[in-house]
Amino acid sequence: MPRDGRRIHRKAVPRLGGVALYISCLAALSLLPFVDNLLTQTLSGFKPEFLTLFCPATLVLLLGVYDDLRGTNAVVKFVGLGLIATLFYVMGGRIDALSIPLVGSVQLPAVASFVITVVWLVGITNAFNLIDGLDGLASGAALFSSLVILGVSVSQERTLMIVVSLVLCGALAGFLRYNFNPASIFLGDSGALFTGFLLAALSVLGTQKATTAVAIVVPILAFGFPVVDTAMTMGRRMISRKPVFQGDNEHIHHMLLARGWSQRRAALVLYGVCALFGLVALIFPVTGSKLTGFMLFVISVAVIIAVGHLRYHEVDEIRAGVKRNVVDRRLRLANNIRVRRAALALSKAPDLDEMFKTTSHLLEFGEFSFASAEVGQPGRRVEWSWARDAEIESPSPSDWSIRLPLVKDGVEWGWLSLYRSVDSEPLLVDTSYLSDLFRCEFTEAAARILTAQDRPAVQSSSLAFVATDGRR
Image (cartoon, rainbow, N blue to C red; front, side, top):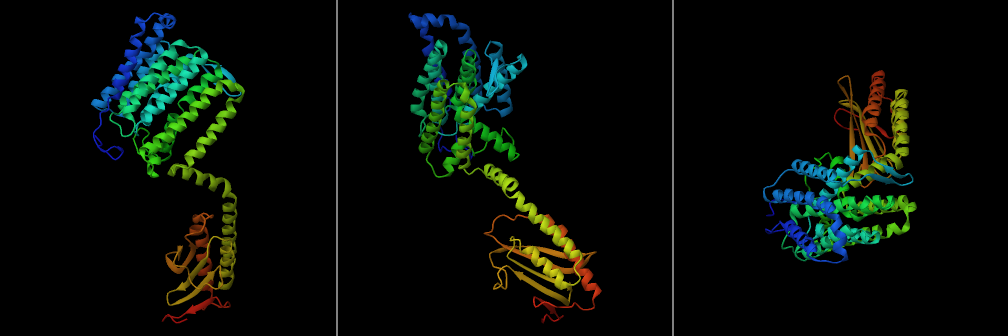
Protein backbone atom coordinates (compact mmCIF):
# COMPACT_ATOMS: atom_id res chain seq x y z
CA MET A 1 0.00 0.00 0.00
CA PRO A 2 1.31 3.49 -0.84
CA ARG A 3 1.12 4.72 2.76
CA ASP A 4 3.72 7.53 2.66
CA GLY A 5 5.10 10.21 0.36
CA ARG A 6 8.16 8.12 -0.55
CA ARG A 7 5.96 5.67 -2.49
CA ILE A 8 5.48 6.66 -6.11
CA HIS A 9 2.89 3.99 -6.98
CA ARG A 10 -0.80 4.74 -6.48
CA LYS A 11 -2.42 1.37 -5.82
CA ALA A 12 -1.70 -1.75 -3.80
CA VAL A 13 0.89 -4.04 -5.43
CA PRO A 14 2.13 -7.49 -4.25
CA ARG A 15 5.67 -7.25 -2.91
CA LEU A 16 6.89 -10.81 -2.38
CA GLY A 17 8.70 -10.98 -5.71
CA GLY A 18 11.75 -12.34 -3.93
CA VAL A 19 9.90 -15.60 -3.33
CA ALA A 20 9.30 -15.97 -7.07
CA LEU A 21 12.99 -15.33 -7.81
CA TYR A 22 14.12 -17.79 -5.16
CA ILE A 23 11.80 -20.55 -6.38
CA SER A 24 12.91 -19.96 -9.97
CA CYS A 25 16.61 -20.26 -9.09
CA LEU A 26 16.07 -23.23 -6.79
CA ALA A 27 13.91 -25.08 -9.33
CA ALA A 28 16.46 -24.64 -12.11
CA LEU A 29 19.42 -25.72 -9.97
CA SER A 30 17.48 -28.65 -8.49
CA LEU A 31 17.09 -30.17 -11.96
CA LEU A 32 20.86 -30.44 -12.52
CA PRO A 33 21.34 -33.70 -10.57
CA PHE A 34 18.87 -35.39 -12.95
CA VAL A 35 20.99 -34.52 -15.98
CA ASP A 36 24.14 -36.45 -16.80
CA ASN A 37 26.64 -34.55 -18.93
CA LEU A 38 30.07 -32.96 -18.67
CA LEU A 39 28.68 -29.84 -16.97
CA THR A 40 26.81 -31.68 -14.23
CA GLN A 41 29.75 -34.00 -13.68
CA THR A 42 31.97 -30.97 -13.15
CA LEU A 43 29.45 -29.35 -10.80
CA SER A 44 29.27 -32.43 -8.60
CA GLY A 45 32.53 -31.37 -6.99
CA PHE A 46 31.13 -27.97 -5.99
CA LYS A 47 28.55 -29.05 -3.41
CA PRO A 48 30.28 -27.17 -0.52
CA GLU A 49 30.33 -23.97 -2.61
CA PHE A 50 26.61 -24.39 -3.41
CA LEU A 51 25.88 -24.63 0.30
CA THR A 52 28.12 -21.61 1.01
CA LEU A 53 26.07 -19.59 -1.46
CA PHE A 54 22.52 -20.69 -0.84
CA CYS A 55 22.34 -21.37 2.88
CA PRO A 56 23.08 -17.73 3.79
CA ALA A 57 21.07 -16.51 0.77
CA THR A 58 18.04 -18.46 2.01
CA LEU A 59 18.34 -16.82 5.42
CA VAL A 60 18.53 -13.41 3.74
CA LEU A 61 15.36 -14.23 1.81
CA LEU A 62 13.57 -15.18 5.03
CA LEU A 63 14.71 -11.93 6.66
CA GLY A 64 13.29 -10.01 3.70
CA VAL A 65 10.01 -11.93 3.77
CA TYR A 66 9.60 -11.12 7.47
CA ASP A 67 10.26 -7.44 6.73
CA ASP A 68 7.73 -7.46 3.88
CA LEU A 69 5.03 -9.11 5.99
CA ARG A 70 5.60 -7.73 9.46
CA GLY A 71 8.03 -4.84 9.00
CA THR A 72 11.27 -4.20 10.88
CA ASN A 73 13.63 -1.28 11.47
CA ALA A 74 16.96 -0.67 9.79
CA VAL A 75 19.02 -1.66 12.85
CA VAL A 76 17.47 -5.13 13.06
CA LYS A 77 17.91 -5.56 9.34
CA PHE A 78 21.59 -4.58 9.41
CA VAL A 79 22.30 -6.79 12.43
CA GLY A 80 20.59 -9.70 10.72
CA LEU A 81 22.55 -9.18 7.51
CA GLY A 82 25.77 -8.89 9.51
CA LEU A 83 25.14 -12.23 11.23
CA ILE A 84 24.30 -13.92 7.93
CA ALA A 85 27.44 -12.45 6.33
CA THR A 86 29.41 -13.85 9.28
CA LEU A 87 27.95 -17.28 8.54
CA PHE A 88 29.03 -16.93 4.91
CA TYR A 89 32.57 -16.09 6.10
CA VAL A 90 32.66 -19.07 8.45
CA MET A 91 31.54 -21.37 5.63
CA GLY A 92 34.54 -20.30 3.53
CA GLY A 93 33.42 -17.25 1.55
CA ARG A 94 35.91 -14.50 2.25
CA ILE A 95 38.06 -11.75 0.74
CA ASP A 96 41.63 -12.75 1.52
CA ALA A 97 43.52 -10.10 -0.48
CA LEU A 98 43.05 -6.62 -1.91
CA SER A 99 44.71 -5.05 -4.91
CA ILE A 100 45.67 -1.40 -4.41
CA PRO A 101 46.57 0.59 -7.57
CA LEU A 102 50.30 1.39 -7.81
CA VAL A 103 50.92 -0.83 -4.77
CA GLY A 104 49.88 -4.30 -5.79
CA SER A 105 48.24 -7.18 -3.99
CA VAL A 106 48.01 -6.96 -0.21
CA GLN A 107 47.32 -10.11 1.78
CA LEU A 108 44.80 -9.39 4.52
CA PRO A 109 45.06 -10.58 8.12
CA ALA A 110 42.15 -12.61 9.43
CA VAL A 111 40.44 -9.71 11.23
CA ALA A 112 40.69 -7.38 8.23
CA SER A 113 39.49 -10.16 5.92
CA PHE A 114 36.44 -10.74 8.11
CA VAL A 115 35.55 -7.05 8.40
CA ILE A 116 35.94 -6.33 4.69
CA THR A 117 33.97 -9.42 3.69
CA VAL A 118 31.06 -8.57 6.00
CA VAL A 119 31.05 -4.88 5.02
CA TRP A 120 31.09 -5.78 1.32
CA LEU A 121 28.23 -8.28 1.64
CA VAL A 122 26.05 -6.03 3.80
CA GLY A 123 26.85 -2.95 1.73
CA ILE A 124 26.05 -4.45 -1.68
CA THR A 125 22.94 -6.20 -0.34
CA ASN A 126 21.66 -2.91 1.06
CA ALA A 127 22.63 -1.05 -2.12
CA PHE A 128 20.18 -3.06 -4.20
CA ASN A 129 17.53 -2.55 -1.53
CA LEU A 130 18.06 1.23 -1.65
CA ILE A 131 17.56 1.52 -5.42
CA ASP A 132 14.35 -0.52 -5.30
CA GLY A 133 12.18 2.57 -5.46
CA LEU A 134 11.27 2.58 -9.15
CA ASP A 135 9.42 -0.03 -11.19
CA GLY A 136 11.97 -2.45 -12.62
CA LEU A 137 15.05 -0.52 -11.49
CA ALA A 138 16.54 -2.91 -8.92
CA SER A 139 15.72 -6.03 -10.93
CA GLY A 140 17.10 -4.46 -14.11
CA ALA A 141 20.30 -3.32 -12.40
CA ALA A 142 20.68 -6.80 -10.89
CA LEU A 143 20.24 -8.33 -14.34
CA PHE A 144 23.08 -6.24 -15.76
CA SER A 145 25.29 -7.11 -12.79
CA SER A 146 24.50 -10.80 -13.29
CA LEU A 147 25.45 -10.53 -16.96
CA VAL A 148 28.78 -8.97 -16.01
CA ILE A 149 29.53 -11.74 -13.51
CA LEU A 150 28.50 -14.28 -16.16
CA GLY A 151 30.84 -12.75 -18.74
CA VAL A 152 33.78 -12.61 -16.35
CA SER A 153 33.08 -16.16 -15.16
CA VAL A 154 33.10 -17.46 -18.73
CA SER A 155 36.43 -15.75 -19.41
CA GLN A 156 37.88 -17.33 -16.27
CA GLU A 157 36.18 -20.71 -16.82
CA ARG A 158 34.55 -20.66 -13.39
CA THR A 159 31.90 -23.37 -13.81
CA LEU A 160 29.97 -22.79 -10.58
CA MET A 161 29.73 -19.04 -11.11
CA ILE A 162 28.70 -19.51 -14.73
CA VAL A 163 25.80 -21.77 -13.78
CA VAL A 164 24.54 -19.72 -10.82
CA SER A 165 24.82 -16.35 -12.60
CA LEU A 166 23.13 -17.80 -15.71
CA VAL A 167 20.24 -19.14 -13.60
CA LEU A 168 19.95 -15.75 -11.85
CA CYS A 169 19.93 -13.96 -15.22
CA GLY A 170 17.05 -16.14 -16.37
CA ALA A 171 15.07 -15.60 -13.18
CA LEU A 172 15.57 -11.82 -13.30
CA ALA A 173 14.75 -11.57 -17.00
CA GLY A 174 11.51 -13.47 -16.45
CA PHE A 175 10.63 -11.40 -13.40
CA LEU A 176 11.40 -8.08 -15.12
CA ARG A 177 8.53 -8.70 -17.52
CA TYR A 178 6.13 -8.19 -14.58
CA ASN A 179 8.22 -5.72 -12.60
CA PHE A 180 8.70 -3.08 -15.33
CA ASN A 181 6.40 -0.06 -15.26
CA PRO A 182 3.52 -0.43 -14.66
CA ALA A 183 4.60 -3.15 -12.24
CA SER A 184 2.18 -5.92 -11.28
CA ILE A 185 4.58 -7.20 -8.59
CA PHE A 186 7.47 -5.70 -6.62
CA LEU A 187 10.74 -7.27 -5.56
CA GLY A 188 10.09 -6.24 -1.99
CA ASP A 189 12.81 -6.48 0.61
CA SER A 190 12.82 -10.23 0.10
CA GLY A 191 13.79 -9.91 -3.57
CA ALA A 192 16.14 -6.93 -3.27
CA LEU A 193 18.03 -8.40 -0.32
CA PHE A 194 18.18 -11.92 -1.77
CA THR A 195 19.39 -10.73 -5.17
CA GLY A 196 21.90 -8.28 -3.72
CA PHE A 197 23.33 -10.84 -1.31
CA LEU A 198 23.61 -13.57 -3.95
CA LEU A 199 25.41 -11.22 -6.34
CA ALA A 200 27.74 -9.96 -3.61
CA ALA A 201 28.51 -13.54 -2.55
CA LEU A 202 29.22 -14.55 -6.15
CA SER A 203 31.62 -11.63 -6.50
CA VAL A 204 33.45 -12.71 -3.32
CA LEU A 205 33.84 -16.28 -4.58
CA GLY A 206 35.00 -14.91 -7.91
CA THR A 207 37.79 -12.87 -6.33
CA GLN A 208 39.36 -15.83 -4.56
CA LYS A 209 41.14 -17.12 -7.66
CA ALA A 210 41.05 -14.09 -9.94
CA THR A 211 43.96 -11.84 -10.80
CA THR A 212 44.35 -9.10 -8.24
CA ALA A 213 43.37 -6.20 -10.52
CA VAL A 214 40.24 -7.99 -11.73
CA ALA A 215 39.40 -9.04 -8.17
CA ILE A 216 39.07 -5.49 -6.87
CA VAL A 217 37.88 -3.46 -9.86
CA VAL A 218 35.45 -5.72 -11.69
CA PRO A 219 33.07 -6.28 -8.73
CA ILE A 220 32.94 -2.54 -8.05
CA LEU A 221 32.14 -1.79 -11.69
CA ALA A 222 29.65 -4.65 -11.90
CA PHE A 223 27.63 -3.01 -9.11
CA GLY A 224 28.50 0.51 -10.28
CA PHE A 225 25.08 2.19 -10.15
CA PRO A 226 23.93 0.72 -6.81
CA VAL A 227 27.33 1.55 -5.29
CA VAL A 228 27.18 5.16 -6.53
CA ASP A 229 23.61 5.65 -5.31
CA THR A 230 24.41 4.19 -1.89
CA ALA A 231 27.56 6.29 -1.53
CA MET A 232 25.60 9.40 -2.50
CA THR A 233 22.84 8.55 -0.04
CA MET A 234 25.19 8.00 2.89
CA GLY A 235 27.22 11.10 2.03
CA ARG A 236 24.13 13.31 1.70
CA ARG A 237 22.69 12.21 5.00
CA MET A 238 25.94 12.70 6.87
CA ILE A 239 26.47 16.18 5.37
CA SER A 240 22.88 17.17 6.20
CA ARG A 241 23.16 15.58 9.66
CA LYS A 242 20.22 13.30 8.96
CA PRO A 243 19.95 9.76 10.37
CA VAL A 244 21.93 7.53 8.00
CA PHE A 245 19.26 4.82 8.05
CA GLN A 246 16.29 7.15 7.62
CA GLY A 247 14.61 6.79 4.23
CA ASP A 248 14.07 9.76 1.94
CA ASN A 249 12.97 10.54 -1.60
CA GLU A 250 16.27 11.96 -2.85
CA HIS A 251 17.84 8.91 -4.46
CA ILE A 252 19.11 9.28 -8.01
CA HIS A 253 15.89 7.90 -9.52
CA HIS A 254 13.84 10.32 -7.37
CA MET A 255 15.89 13.26 -8.68
CA LEU A 256 15.23 12.17 -12.26
CA LEU A 257 11.50 11.94 -11.55
CA ALA A 258 11.66 15.42 -9.99
CA ARG A 259 12.93 16.73 -13.34
CA GLY A 260 9.66 15.61 -14.91
CA TRP A 261 10.86 12.27 -16.27
CA SER A 262 8.48 9.32 -16.45
CA GLN A 263 9.26 6.11 -14.58
CA ARG A 264 9.94 4.31 -17.85
CA ARG A 265 12.35 6.96 -19.10
CA ALA A 266 14.22 7.11 -15.81
CA ALA A 267 14.48 3.31 -15.65
CA LEU A 268 15.72 3.03 -19.25
CA VAL A 269 18.34 5.75 -18.76
CA LEU A 270 19.60 4.08 -15.59
CA TYR A 271 19.67 0.75 -17.44
CA GLY A 272 22.01 2.48 -19.87
CA VAL A 273 24.19 3.60 -16.96
CA CYS A 274 24.31 0.02 -15.66
CA ALA A 275 25.18 -1.21 -19.15
CA LEU A 276 28.08 1.27 -19.40
CA PHE A 277 29.45 0.18 -16.03
CA GLY A 278 29.07 -3.43 -17.12
CA LEU A 279 30.83 -2.85 -20.43
CA VAL A 280 33.79 -1.24 -18.68
CA ALA A 281 33.88 -4.14 -16.20
CA LEU A 282 33.99 -6.67 -19.04
CA ILE A 283 36.74 -4.95 -21.04
CA PHE A 284 38.81 -4.14 -17.97
CA PRO A 285 40.57 -7.53 -17.69
CA VAL A 286 41.85 -7.02 -21.26
CA THR A 287 43.45 -3.65 -20.46
CA GLY A 288 45.65 -5.03 -17.67
CA SER A 289 46.30 -3.87 -14.16
CA LYS A 290 48.56 -0.98 -15.13
CA LEU A 291 45.56 1.13 -16.08
CA THR A 292 43.60 0.39 -12.90
CA GLY A 293 44.18 3.73 -11.19
CA PHE A 294 43.70 5.75 -14.37
CA MET A 295 40.43 4.04 -15.28
CA LEU A 296 39.05 4.44 -11.79
CA PHE A 297 40.00 8.14 -11.88
CA VAL A 298 38.25 8.69 -15.22
CA ILE A 299 35.14 6.84 -14.04
CA SER A 300 35.08 8.79 -10.78
CA VAL A 301 35.29 12.12 -12.63
CA ALA A 302 32.47 11.06 -14.96
CA VAL A 303 30.30 10.05 -12.00
CA ILE A 304 30.98 13.33 -10.17
CA ILE A 305 30.04 15.36 -13.26
CA ALA A 306 26.86 13.35 -13.81
CA VAL A 307 25.77 13.58 -10.16
CA GLY A 308 26.48 17.32 -10.23
CA HIS A 309 23.63 17.75 -12.74
CA LEU A 310 21.03 16.15 -10.46
CA ARG A 311 20.56 19.33 -8.36
CA TYR A 312 21.38 17.84 -5.00
CA HIS A 313 21.46 20.58 -2.35
CA GLU A 314 24.44 18.90 -0.69
CA VAL A 315 26.40 18.78 -3.95
CA ASP A 316 25.60 22.42 -4.71
CA GLU A 317 26.72 23.43 -1.22
CA ILE A 318 29.97 21.48 -1.52
CA ARG A 319 30.62 23.13 -4.89
CA ALA A 320 29.90 26.55 -3.36
CA GLY A 321 32.17 25.71 -0.42
CA VAL A 322 35.02 24.78 -2.75
CA LYS A 323 34.53 28.04 -4.62
CA ARG A 324 34.51 30.01 -1.37
CA ASN A 325 37.63 28.33 -0.01
CA VAL A 326 39.65 28.05 -3.20
CA VAL A 327 38.51 30.61 -5.76
CA ASP A 328 37.05 33.42 -3.63
CA ARG A 329 39.29 33.06 -0.60
CA ARG A 330 42.01 35.39 -1.88
CA LEU A 331 39.59 38.20 -2.74
CA ARG A 332 37.71 37.72 0.54
CA LEU A 333 41.02 37.99 2.41
CA ALA A 334 41.87 41.23 0.57
CA ASN A 335 38.44 42.70 1.36
CA ASN A 336 38.74 41.79 5.04
CA ILE A 337 42.11 43.54 5.15
CA ARG A 338 40.49 46.65 3.61
CA VAL A 339 37.93 46.65 6.40
CA ARG A 340 40.69 46.42 9.01
CA ARG A 341 42.60 49.31 7.41
CA ALA A 342 39.44 51.41 7.23
CA ALA A 343 38.76 50.70 10.90
CA LEU A 344 42.27 51.87 11.79
CA ALA A 345 41.86 55.01 9.68
CA LEU A 346 38.56 55.79 11.42
CA SER A 347 40.27 55.68 14.81
CA LYS A 348 42.53 58.53 13.60
CA ALA A 349 39.94 60.61 11.68
CA PRO A 350 40.06 64.25 12.91
CA ASP A 351 36.61 65.29 11.62
CA LEU A 352 33.42 64.01 10.07
CA ASP A 353 34.56 64.82 6.56
CA GLU A 354 37.61 62.55 6.94
CA MET A 355 35.49 59.88 8.62
CA PHE A 356 33.04 59.72 5.72
CA LYS A 357 35.84 59.92 3.17
CA THR A 358 37.44 56.85 4.75
CA THR A 359 34.08 55.05 4.59
CA SER A 360 33.73 55.97 0.90
CA HIS A 361 37.16 54.51 0.10
CA LEU A 362 36.18 51.30 1.83
CA LEU A 363 32.92 50.98 -0.12
CA GLU A 364 34.70 51.38 -3.44
CA PHE A 365 36.11 47.85 -3.31
CA GLY A 366 33.04 46.69 -5.20
CA GLU A 367 30.75 44.89 -2.79
CA PHE A 368 28.14 47.62 -2.20
CA SER A 369 26.21 49.96 -4.50
CA PHE A 370 24.82 52.53 -2.06
CA ALA A 371 25.28 53.67 1.54
CA SER A 372 23.60 56.17 3.84
CA ALA A 373 24.08 57.29 7.43
CA GLU A 374 22.75 59.58 10.12
CA VAL A 375 25.25 60.52 12.82
CA GLY A 376 24.62 62.52 15.99
CA GLN A 377 22.11 62.95 18.77
CA PRO A 378 18.35 63.15 18.10
CA GLY A 379 17.40 66.61 16.87
CA ARG A 380 20.91 67.38 15.68
CA ARG A 381 22.19 64.86 13.21
CA VAL A 382 24.36 64.81 10.12
CA GLU A 383 23.13 62.96 7.06
CA TRP A 384 25.53 61.36 4.62
CA SER A 385 25.13 59.21 1.51
CA TRP A 386 27.35 57.53 -1.02
CA ALA A 387 26.60 55.86 -4.36
CA ARG A 388 28.77 53.91 -6.77
CA ASP A 389 27.06 55.72 -9.63
CA ALA A 390 27.08 59.48 -9.09
CA GLU A 391 23.64 59.81 -10.74
CA ILE A 392 21.95 57.58 -8.15
CA GLU A 393 20.38 59.48 -5.25
CA SER A 394 18.70 56.60 -3.40
CA PRO A 395 19.00 52.82 -3.12
CA SER A 396 17.20 50.65 -5.67
CA PRO A 397 13.99 48.88 -4.60
CA SER A 398 15.73 45.61 -5.51
CA ASP A 399 18.65 46.22 -3.12
CA TRP A 400 19.04 44.43 0.16
CA SER A 401 20.74 46.19 3.06
CA ILE A 402 22.73 45.82 6.25
CA ARG A 403 21.74 48.37 8.91
CA LEU A 404 24.42 48.93 11.53
CA PRO A 405 23.20 50.70 14.70
CA LEU A 406 25.73 53.15 16.16
CA VAL A 407 25.55 52.62 19.93
CA LYS A 408 28.28 53.41 22.48
CA ASP A 409 27.91 52.86 26.22
CA GLY A 410 24.15 52.63 25.80
CA VAL A 411 23.99 55.99 23.97
CA GLU A 412 22.62 56.01 20.42
CA TRP A 413 24.71 57.90 17.85
CA GLY A 414 22.69 57.13 14.70
CA TRP A 415 22.95 54.37 12.10
CA LEU A 416 24.80 53.31 8.95
CA SER A 417 23.11 51.31 6.15
CA LEU A 418 24.94 49.49 3.35
CA TYR A 419 23.04 48.42 0.21
CA ARG A 420 23.79 45.94 -2.58
CA SER A 421 21.79 44.45 -5.45
CA VAL A 422 20.07 41.11 -5.04
CA ASP A 423 21.57 40.15 -8.43
CA SER A 424 25.13 40.66 -7.22
CA GLU A 425 27.65 37.88 -6.73
CA PRO A 426 28.03 36.49 -3.18
CA LEU A 427 29.33 39.00 -0.63
CA LEU A 428 33.11 38.51 -0.47
CA VAL A 429 33.73 40.06 2.93
CA ASP A 430 32.98 38.67 6.37
CA THR A 431 29.91 40.44 7.72
CA SER A 432 31.27 40.07 11.26
CA TYR A 433 34.09 42.43 10.27
CA LEU A 434 31.49 45.00 9.22
CA SER A 435 29.05 44.47 12.09
CA ASP A 436 31.68 44.32 14.83
CA LEU A 437 35.07 45.83 13.96
CA PHE A 438 34.05 48.50 11.44
CA ARG A 439 30.80 49.45 13.21
CA CYS A 440 32.56 49.88 16.56
CA GLU A 441 35.31 52.10 15.11
CA PHE A 442 32.75 54.10 13.10
CA THR A 443 30.71 54.69 16.29
CA GLU A 444 33.81 55.58 18.33
CA ALA A 445 34.92 58.07 15.68
CA ALA A 446 31.48 59.70 15.43
CA ALA A 447 31.09 59.97 19.21
CA ARG A 448 34.63 61.34 19.64
CA ILE A 449 34.32 63.96 16.90
CA LEU A 450 30.82 65.15 17.78
CA THR A 451 31.58 65.30 21.51
CA ALA A 452 34.72 67.37 20.92
CA GLN A 453 32.85 69.97 18.88
CA ASP A 454 29.91 72.02 19.98
CA ARG A 455 28.73 71.86 16.38
CA PRO A 456 30.03 69.62 13.59
CA ALA A 457 32.17 71.41 11.06
CA VAL A 458 30.62 70.59 7.71
CA GLN A 459 33.16 70.91 4.89
CA SER A 460 31.78 68.53 2.28
CA SER A 461 28.76 69.03 0.02
CA SER A 462 27.83 65.41 0.78
CA LEU A 463 27.05 66.32 4.43
CA ALA A 464 23.94 68.12 5.63
CA PHE A 465 23.01 69.29 9.14
CA VAL A 466 19.47 68.33 10.15
CA ALA A 467 17.58 70.64 12.52
CA THR A 468 15.17 69.48 15.17
CA ASP A 469 12.14 70.06 12.95
CA GLY A 470 13.65 67.90 10.18
CA ARG A 471 14.65 70.77 7.84
CA ARG A 472 18.10 70.42 6.24
